[in-house]
Length: 412
Image (cartoon, rainbow, N blue to C red; front, side, top):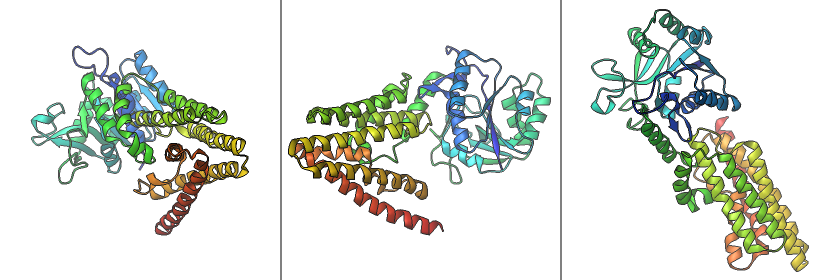
């Protein structure tokens, strides 16, 4: 059944912290944006944010979400919030200041109402509200629109979040433990965090960045410069550095490398195209932490592919001018065509496999093709690089086609 999310965003942060819990910094954005994107990733059709006031930072956060095509509505009181829901859809209540792992959101989305996500009543979980002698509420609850409306009508001066949770419990809710033998995750220590101050929200953002890895990255991203990019990305995360800036810089470096190849400045071109890879990888990690498309969207992928293709063709053009052998430029064209086909096959394969595969990082893509130039440059065999790329892409294409056929056969 379809569900929507009701996110509480009206509680003030702890003493000494200015503003709302929902606006605490997290991964260079606000905690609220993380909650919204988590709910949408779990399948929410739209989001209702319950607020008492709308500071400029909250308005800016909502605008960013809307620019990404996320349906968000603000409600200034509980009755208005209830009116935003369709009578037949379920409502996922998200506690003010909650940071929860995607597994928690997805597990709750798969349940039937009423369900409460809970943690054990231990000293480590003292920040969470007690439900009974053994459990505390972990910040997510699945209920009905009827329950939301009924609670809103009888609230008075009571807190909607706490009162609605109590009514869900009284209605005979199932308890879904975060951890334990029948829990959602193995360890609840970082799976659910209630952030009342910026230190907690920032730490949660860094933990999320550390857990996220580029599962779809090629071998240079995952094995060559991952140790470097994994250290640099957290430094940029809280400084509101936009991933698109880094991606644009990476594309410009690649275009600059292509220009250097065009004029025969081979080592300069090599340095420029190789520097582009780590920049793009850092951008991908930042986007992952902010729960956005780590590839940057089709426009970025297209521009990056064009720039990498220009680098291959530029070297082929310089080779034919230097040696007079047309075969070098033909190899560049073949390399470009096979890379395009391999990238298309990679896209289809990732969708069919529905997850990571241990062989995928070793197949050819633009980034792997660029880094393949290193051994040829070291040996002074620059002009053989496009032919090697063509062979690499052709072999990758062959194996990917077979894997795709097998994936389709198993699915059918």
